[in-house]
Image (cartoon, rainbow, N blue to C red; front, side, top):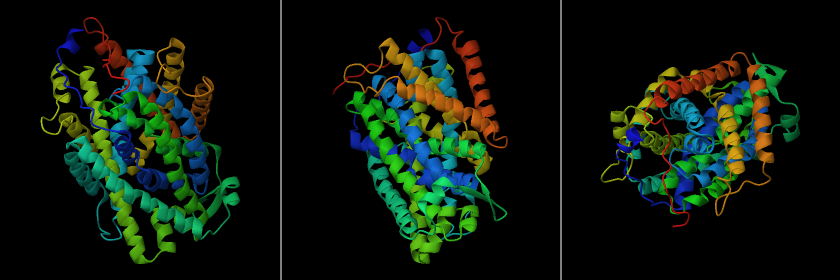
Amino acid sequence: MATQAAIATPGLKRTLGPVAVSLLTLSVLSPAASVFITGADIIHQAGTGAALAFIVGGLLTLIFTFAQAELGSAFPFAGGDYATIGQALGPRWGFVQFGLDMLSTPVLLALTASGIALYLHGVAPALPNVPTAIAALAVATMLAVLNVRTNAVITGVFLAIELSALALVSVLGLGSPARGIGEVLTAPVTFTGGLAASLTLGIAAVAISAASWAISGSGQAIYFAEELHDPVRVGRLVIRITLASIVTMVLPVLALTIGARDLPATLAADSPFAALIAQHASPLVATLIGLGIAAAIFNAVMAGVICYGRWLWSSGRDAIWAAPINRALVSIHPRFGSPWVATIVVGVTAMGFTLLGLPMLVLLSAANGIANWALLNTAAWVGRRRGVTGQGEAYRAPLFPLPNIVSLVVTAVLAVMTWQDAETGRTGELVVAGTIIGALLYHRFVLAQRPGGWRMVAPSFDRVS
């Protein structure tokens, strides 16, 4: 079509192997950021039920991710979920997913960056949260413009620090238990004003949904697929990263709920994991762990900007915006080979979202995962039926269509249960519903009105290189 054909789109270079993509992806989804930031908010809401939420959420994430892996292997494009869904279900629903990505991307980056100051308070107690988050995003954005192979090395070093911090927290809590694992998993409690109360069904649903969202993210390997030497194998890589994420995130959350000596005070602390560390480690060790966690969170911010820069670059190639914006977004840096304009736009947008504050950011992320998994599993089901996924050397999800059916049923149940939580869950679902409606209207009255309609680009790729 004329509008898309007019856009000069230099391609990304295939310079990455599976190890580099794994390092970048694990850094984006950041087990430490998911545990110490999102996990902390889940702990505030669900109390000791956070452990069960992460276990159930991890299992659900694995089931959900089968669809994402199969779609990504069939369509290994830099646009990620919106591109794969669009290829399987058609441009309209691909653009709906893009709308959801428009909401979740700056929210995720801002939410992650907002946790850095919390873990630097041991050395700088007066450090303000929002300015620190903005500064971290600014530095991360500048680094994200560099060559992707260089960034893979940088993120790999930070990731080693991150995994060490998670391991230390797990050892501290599990090594000195204050209560049994059976008590935590079978009788979860929350605390209000120091008084214990049983976990309600609505809060449990929100916690499971949020935990699943925190653990998910291995599909972000697909954003790097156009830079991967053997893109068709990205689906298997996604599943391996998912399994690694579940283990690294469940253990420290379980360690906190089992190892906290003063449970009400720990659960109520601004940073429950910092409180746990203070109970079990010397001030020096606690400070070092806090610095390690802050470094890990910064790594997640930087890797996220790198990743979502590819996503926004893809939107320019797909001509989602006005022609001048599209041309700017597809610009590739002449020296570093990175989508530098798109990367900077992602970073600056996330800086603006930090001004919303942590509670609002968590609220905006509450229901996004439910809609995302529903679209992915519908697309994978339709794609397999049409014979466009799971073919040849591409990843083929097991037990088709059972994982898709289970995923769709569970997402429906979670949506109903989340709606019962009027304060957070219901508001989050209304925000997501409004986003979907807005995306459908933009598609109908802007994209579909272009001469010849609108379609997404389907770049060719070598199945084995």
